[in-house]
Image (cartoon, rainbow, N blue to C red; front, side):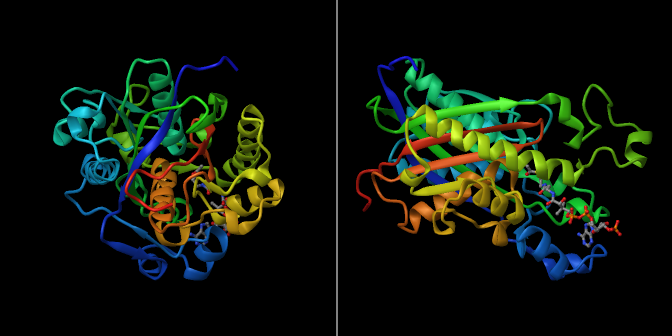
Length: 338
Ligand code: ACO
């Protein structure tokens, strides 16, 4: 790779999940399912659900405020706000603009990024590019979803999988040999219809017909997603390590997208990484799509498990299909231990 003049690193993180907990036992009262089926097939015990008034920007704002506080910067220090989401508040304007306004980030450009569960990884990679190229100094990246409002609560194959939440990270410049050491992104749009919301866009605007067919809700072919996700996440892990000339043994923490415990287990098995290095919180939050990685990172970091100098690898896979990874050497913000 070309030698860069500067690098970028995460200087703060935050997350917010709605208070309301929906357990598998609660789901047993909504669809024909069981706690046992959900736990053994997905690893999920409970998930958070937004209330009627809460939209993606509300969750994103709280995660972003926590990340800014953690980074010790003011909103008007931010040059860019990138929000990875497929559940925006509305078709337009971008949820990122709503977050930018409510934060008071009056010097920032703002845009949404639609890469489904890979949205946060795509966002981090984009922010890294903007910083190393010198176009921006400080970029806020948020992964947020309120998927509960796009789920078909009559479809037991999908409604048990997902939850609502937001995670955020602030990126700033650093020495080119520090911070982010490797980035990778790929896509395959030929598989779009394995995981999608068919109606509500310009292809099939919502009509009485699409409404009756329930096409404004998430549709998924679970087995196809499963196979592809495992292969893509294993590849994305190996490629980003090779880019940085590191071995898997040098990785201290692997934070995979929390889609399903069986996908995570299959990735662990194929890579041969010790389980204790892999961060898993799907049991408590379900699949929050673009938010899973920043929520897990913020949780585990603030628990003190990630120390300065640790090598961290994020890897995600999502609808599109999209997938990607980010590898970095972590530095704790000044004033924190580690
Ligand atoms: N409760 C009880 N039974 C269920 C449920 C449920 N919630 N959902 C499906 N079933 C039934 C099916 O109807 C089927 O019944 P049948 O045999 O009578 O037809 C049976 O369980 C088996 O269905 P499968 O779809 O074959 O179940 P499988 O064991 O493959 O598990 C799952 C389904 C968990 C979705 C699996 O395919 C999977 O893990 N896929 C990966 C996809 C995924 O995790 N997506 C998350 C979003 S994508 C992302 O984040 C990248």
